[in-house]
Length: 472
Image 1: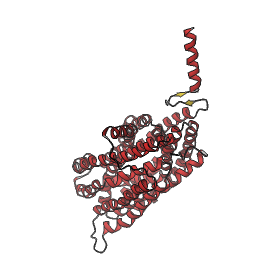
Image 2: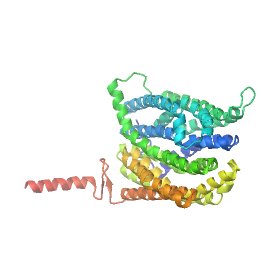
Image 3: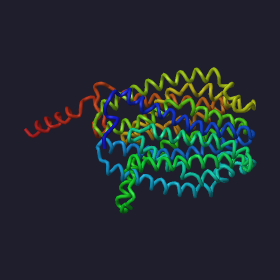
Image 4: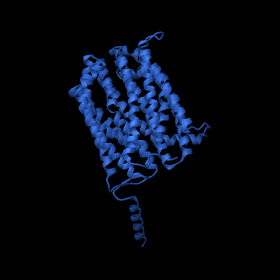
């Protein structure tokens, strides 16, 4: 296979990759915000119920995204090496693996709705609403996970336009179906939260069909011969060597949201609803860094597979500087308009106050958070996800949890959100330090992944010389 990302100016390649991803991610967020807007019209209880489902849905989505990251990383590096048959095998086997994972988590989810959301702090009066939504959402997981894996393969090939168009198709269908099923129209009765879940599942059905059709008829990457067991296990092992740590890394963020939701539950349904609203608006504010991080993985993977290490270093330098600039701009815009934005979705004073505190304080750290996104994606693209996982785990266990407890005791809601901000900044500095070592003009990255201020070839010559000296 021809590597599309190993030639041309680095900045132009990143721009071409990222622009379609901006539109695609915007479509996904429009999907989420549309649900939030229409559900908010049902009442504060419904908005609080959907806010409790948000971290669980995000966790399961993060598992799918982690698997997609593993697929994208392995496939991009194999594309860089030019092995088309192996790319086809990995693509097909990754889809089989996604079906297995969907079956496991759907079954577990359907049987643990009440105890899970009770643990998250949901009050008994919210359980019927949560069940209405999640009982349908779990059945529709296949329409979320399988297309996500297919789109990850397309991005690994350097094609971000088609996945973005597919995501846009889903968003448009969801926007049209949401009011019909939530509020009812004609022969369709008003279904409330059940209607929101049904609209989501139906819209994602289109993604599934479009993604598989493009993989098969355009890219010719699906194989319909049944693999032998050893080949299948070997493919799954290579995919999960990156996918499993990437899943663990992706889980850190929704686990943090779940933890914050449980803390916020002590301040009432209005505070939880405001936090849920702010979390969804945050995703919109981070769309550009998210698009860049989604693009950097395939770029790094193909260039690493082709042994073009200087292009990898240059892409990180440009990406990190952009994240800082974007984060500063967003912090200013949200900090000066947070109450107005929150009022667009819900006029309840408690909801507006909670969302406004979050959107004023946490965006200060968005530049650092963008750096973390990009660094993690690059590490995954290189097939070295352990460092990315270590950064995220450090943020959750050693920074966020103790700081959130302390902040709550000292400053209440302000302290909980302040812990989020401080944790992002500290881990962003860690990622920046990693980038500094990487981009040092005297440093060279060996294929083994080790850092050195002496080029690898020079080290080999030095070792041979020392060995010769010892022998003589």
